[in-house]
Image (cartoon, rainbow, N blue to C red; front, side, top):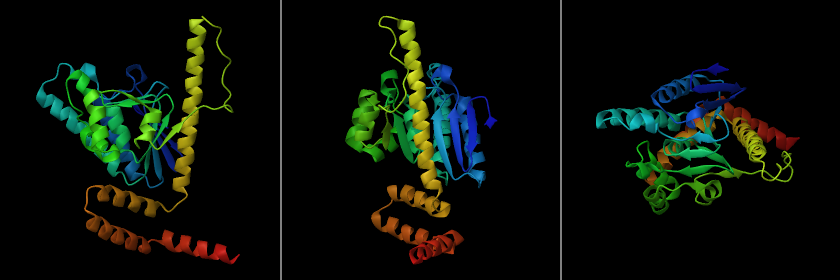
Length: 286
């Protein structure tokens, strides 16, 4: 396991877990977090052994609470431009990473945290997640891609509602508008700690923390299972598919379809394709 100050990188075979580790600030992204995250993405891009990436936050309370308001409160426009440019650069890098990226949204994903989740290919949220773009409540619009990516994912009307009000939405609501793919919930089969005695605030708090840990573990298990479903397929085909979907988002249909033909044909040069097609045909003969 490679550990920087704020980013933990944990390889699990051909899957890597990237964890923002600043729980005391709800995993908010200061300049150092942005720099370390950028370095981590470069490491993952260069590692051919890693086929899928999961991004999450340390602890159970937050995926990422966004930009660092304590840093932003006193900065001038030029410093603000530099901060947003650095943040956008790393988020663009994640979006363009050739490997599929899953966001395991555990708790708050606000502002820059929501923007970080949106550059991931697939978003899985725990039922206690709260997602939003609350920037207007502190005097700024979203600056790390929120005005552009949210409208592309949920449509302009819903994006405007979320951004203009600055309100957080629940994981279930995020799923209903297509902002997250799936919500992980605790069920009857999950072994939860016994109820705390009524009126015992300390015991109730301890139980809530334990339940949050169980939920987070279940979220990570779900994300890992999904990553394994992806990594058993042709890495080349998945990589090309990601590029085609991302490019198609802002292309007209004719350009997108032409790109798709090129991407499809290119995969015929790869041995993955021949081996997998032959295996499929041979399976039918058994």
